[in-house]
Length: 90
Picture (tube, rainbow, N blue to C red):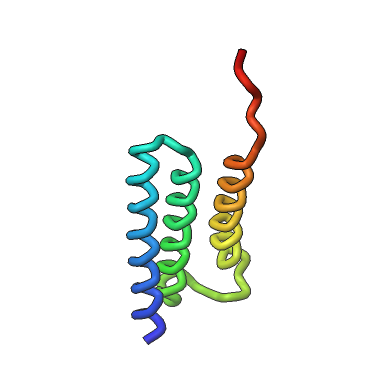
């Protein structure tokens, strides 16, 4: 049952990433690109967690937390970059 839920969350993360990629393609705002990459990383993490026998999954493995750290760092960077003060071009 856990694998089913992980697969559903991975699929939802991929769909959300596709929405952000579509918004990025129309606006060319890097904010949407960073969010799309974050959701792609989260989908990869869910797939990694769904197949414990294949990937040697262990919750004590640092790789398990590295996926999440990267995903949340991308979101944090997107927000910080969006709110960064811009210099006026003369």
